[in-house]
Image (cartoon, rainbow, N blue to C red; front, top):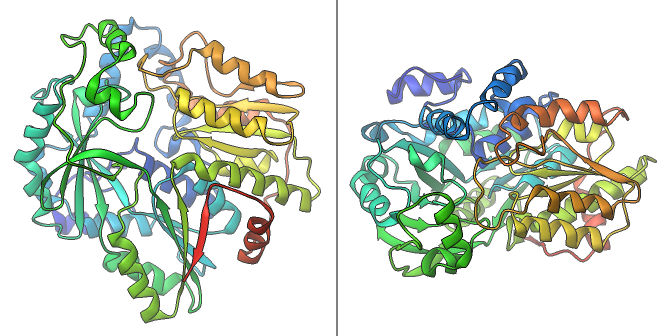
Length: 479
């Protein structure tokens, strides 16, 4: 539910009463994964990525019957409808957001709390450990009123420079990573600018949540994704990032390629390659990367209040996925549950409760791109073979660079002993199957008939025992 005002005093009241602050994006990795994690810890499932009621499925079906151009306009308008006017950036308060995020969770004692980078595999790790996660990064969608041509990144940079101080002056604890991606975010970026921000300190709300819900001696997990991207420093606490992690490489965004040219031709663009600003350094990637300033503040707070700090460090968002999948397999074996069913999740399409209820092993993909497909196939080629594979695919509405055709995804099922099935995906509509944001949940319950009671959570000692048994691309570091 959206709060009806951007006044900071009223916004604080709304946060206390569990209203979403009006400058928070619903369809974002941080807010979506926060909702999924908190839903599980409240004993709830996660339909419609936490914001779309299942009753909307017939409406989504009707939208998919429209001509492609009208479908895209619905998608663009829906995204722009989430965005705030740029002048309202002066009303944004980071503590209102942090307070709302902390209040998504039941206020009770936890063995550990995770803080830091967004990661879909982390949702399932948190479910296994009965552990809340507090994001470092969140997205503020800002309506640019058509002032930015999607294929002109320098326009986007100049537009962001004009409005950045409206946000930053009132939020000294935030760093702005203005991200412009004309590839995967082609539809949404036509109506809004992506102002992603990263917390530099814990702040009062996160500190209060820790003091009230983490007993002395408890563990704070710092989730540190070291993914970087070539960026431009615009000013103090203001970064511009052209392109984003997905199908196209940083080099393709800056220098072009045959794939980029073909894509721009398909999209009837006036460009055949983009002309972005010259990067002046690699910095934490806007959506996934960890800003190290937060670590120093967490370590200060932990020392002051008698908490342990453990760092979970990885290079790519999906690096945690094989570890979590194998952890669930090991956990199921301890529970004497068959471990032969793999459930592949995609971006925001995740369902931690029904993963456990159906006895499925979760494997999260960052997106639906060739790089995600390679990560999945590498895992399947190097693990014990599954009987069945169930596959979710996030539909972002664009035949973007590096997007495998649906038939290529279908080949994944050949790696299972029996076969597999898409979950919530209409193959003839992908990647414009917007009803998949509802059907991933309803299909999962329909396709997999197995049912198990929700287990008691794993202990931190269980996690330590498991981690010692495997060789993963993830580092666990203790204070």
